[in-house]
Length: 111
Length: 114
Image (cartoon, rainbow over all chains, first blue to last red; front, side, top):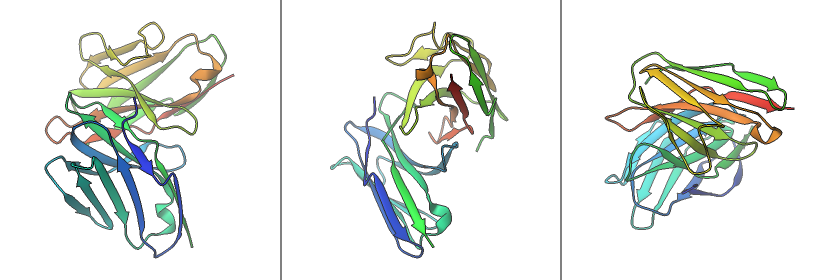
C-alpha cells in the first residue's frame, strides 16, 4: 500500500528558481528516501535520511524530516532544465527494507 | 552503489503469453525486490526475492502470476504469466544495502501487452 503522499502533484518553475516538494506518510519509519525518475525510466537514488536526522544536504539538494508531523521536504536550489523529472519519496516501515512509495511530484523546469 | 541491469529493456507481448525478466547485479546483495509501476502511477512492491527460498509476495500478488527465482546473490528473474493488457507496466528490480538501507533500482523493463 502507498504510504507517502507528495505535494504538489505537479510543479512548474523557471530555471534558477528553487523547487520544494513535500511528502507525508502515515506510520513510523526507519528511513525516508527520495528518488528521481526521468520519463518513465529507472529510478535514481537522491538521498536517504534516517528517522533520527532532521536535515541532510547533497549538492543542490536539501532534505528535511519531521517525524512528529510525519513529513519530509525536498528542496532543489537553483534548478536547471535537466532537473525536469518526477520525484518520489519512499519510506520503509519499521518491519524492514521494502519501500512504500508516494504518488510523486512532476517537476517541470523551463529555460 | 551496486550496478543493476535488466533484460529485456522493453517488450511487446501478446495476451496469454508469459515473459521472464532478468535482473543482474554486479556484486552480491542480500536484499532484492521486484516492483511494478503502472502507467502514470507510482511504484508498488510485488515481492521480496529470497535467495534459495520462495519469494515473499505482497498483498494482491501471487506466485502463480508472478513466479520469481533467486538462484544466487547476484541474479533474479520475474516472470509475468498469462499476460493481459492490465499487466502493461514498467517492472523494476532493486537491491538494498544491508547496512545503509539505501535502495537502488535497475533501469526497468517496459512491458506492453496487446
